[in-house]
Amino acid sequence: MRRTVGALLGRLGLLRPVRRVYRLAVGRARTAAWLLGGTRTDGGIPVPPPHLCFRSAADYDTARFLATGRRGMESVGEMLADMGRPLPGFGRLLDLGCGCGRILRHLPPSGAPAAAGADIDEEAVRWCGRNLPGAFVRTGLSEPLPFGPESFDLVLAVAVICHLSLPHQRFLLREMGRILGPGGIALVTVKGPSRRHEIPSSLVGDFDAGRPVVVEPEFSGTRYCLAYHPPGALEGLLPPGLESIRRLPLGSRDTAQDACLLTPSPP
Image (cartoon, rainbow, N blue to C red; front, side):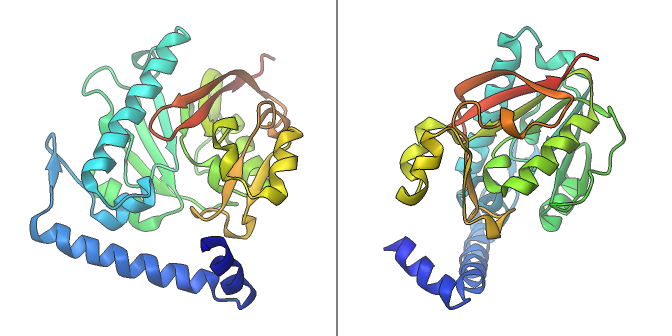
């Protein structure tokens, strides 16, 4: 039913404005209720309002926002430790698609790398800049990241690629390769075989043939654009100089996505 209504609104040119109005109305209502009695800090760190939590975690519940972010950071730490590269060994971390700091807020208080975040959501970036340690910048879907070559040795892109069209995926992966230093790691999560049941029947054949699938690519950069990558599909999008070293099915526990670990190719 939901897809049928969405298709009808799309044909009428009303899908995007209806979605925007709905999200704005619900988000502001949840924020008003939160201001009257919601959790305002966690561990001494301010908690973002529900409408920003939703943009990062698809949930207006601030408690679940905090819980999924905590699991996300734990997953990152465990995956890096399993490959012999524990988090404290990195010096410079960039969280691509940081939102309002869902994961970065849970960096360990000592031994953590110097953190930066980038996102297309200007309001979320402003909130991070006011409330979290680190440097936060707004960037565009097709704009080069405002960092020099080899600026980071760890880049996180958790639940980012899965909301981009193929051209935007390729562009972001090129930028990751540019800003990663030698021996650096990019941890990218993707929707894999465990999410196959979500794909429209008309596109399942492409997924089963090993090709990436993007639903509603016209909404790239929003949660309405959904990308799925069977094993080996992300590797086909990588630019020269960036290679895959491991794919961990459901390695990202907070998002129920596969985790792909990438690194610059040796010269």
